[in-house]
Length: 382
Image 1 (spheres, one colour):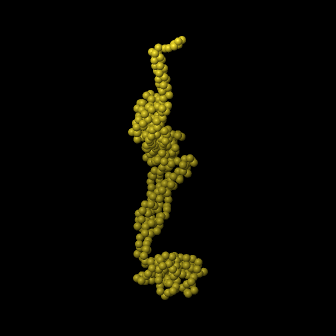
Image 2 (cartoon, one colour):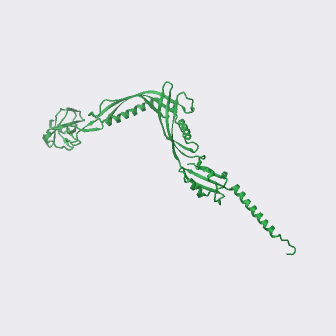
Image 3 (tube, rainbow, N blue to C red):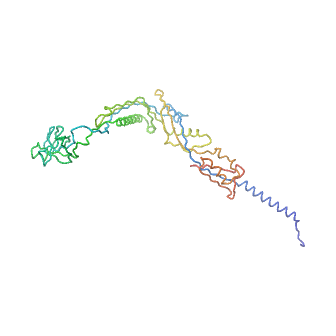
C-alpha cells in the first residue's frame, strides 16, 4: 500500500509468540501467588483413659507442685444404732384366726378377760370366737385383740361384721362390742421373720450411716470451700452387730455399728488439671485432648500416714481425643497435585477422620498446588 509499512511475517509471528509467552507467564505468576487450598478436617472423637497417683498432704503449699496437692487427712470415729423391719413371712401353726377391735362407747372402762365370748347379735347363744388375752378398754377407746374359734373343727370364715359380747348386761351390749375389719379365717396366718437379706441390707445401711457421720465430723472442722471437696473414707476398723439372727420370728430388730476411719479431702479442681496433663501426655504428638470428663473421675485411697498427715490416692479419669495437627496422616507431602475426590479418598482410610471438606482458591482450580506451603490443613473443633 502506498505510503504504508508492513512488518515481515516472521516478525509478526515472533511478536505474537512473545505476547503469548508473557500471558502464560502472567497466568503462572498469578497461580503461584494466589493459588492455595484449605482442607478442613472433622475428626472423630475417640475415648481415652488414664490412671495416676497423687499425694494429698496438709503440708503442701497452695496449688501444690507436681503430683502433690494440698488437702486434709483426718482420723474420725462414729457409732449408730437403728431399728429395722423384718420382711420375711412364714405360716404359723396357731389357733388364732385373726383380730377384732373392741369398741367402748360407754363412759366407764371395761375389762374383758381372756376367753371372753363373742357372738352374732342374731344368735347370742352360739359362741363364734373368744378373746386370746385379757384387755382393758378405756371409755371412748378401742383395743385390738386376737381371737380364736370356739370349735376349731367346725369353724368357718367370718366376714367383717359386728359381734356382741353376750356376757355383758343387755343395755351395755349396744355400747361395748367388737368388730373385725378383715375376715376371720384359719388361712393366711403368718408371722414376721428376719431374713438373711434383711441383715445384709441393714448392714449396708448402717455402714452408709457411719460413713456419713464420719464425713460430717470432718466437714464440721473445714472451711466453707473445703466442705465441698470430695471425701474419701478409708476404714481402719468397723463392727456391726444385730440383736437377732436370720430366721428369728420377730417384726423388728435392732442393729448397731461402730467405725474408725481416715477421711481424705482435696480440691477436685486441682485433680482435674493434673488429669488433663496426664491424659495429654498419654496421647503423644499424634493425638490431642479434646475434653476431660470430670464425671468419670474416681478415686481410691492406696495408703495413708496419720503421723505426717498424708495420703496416696489413685485417680482414674476418662476423656475424649482427636488427631493432632502433627499427626502423620496429615502430611502435606501426600496431598500435592490431587483433586478434591482424591484427597477425600486418601483420608477415608483413617477411622479417626469423620469428614473432609476441600476449598480451592481461586474456585476454578481442580488440583492442589505442587507447593506444600500453599496447602492449609484446619482441624475443626468438635
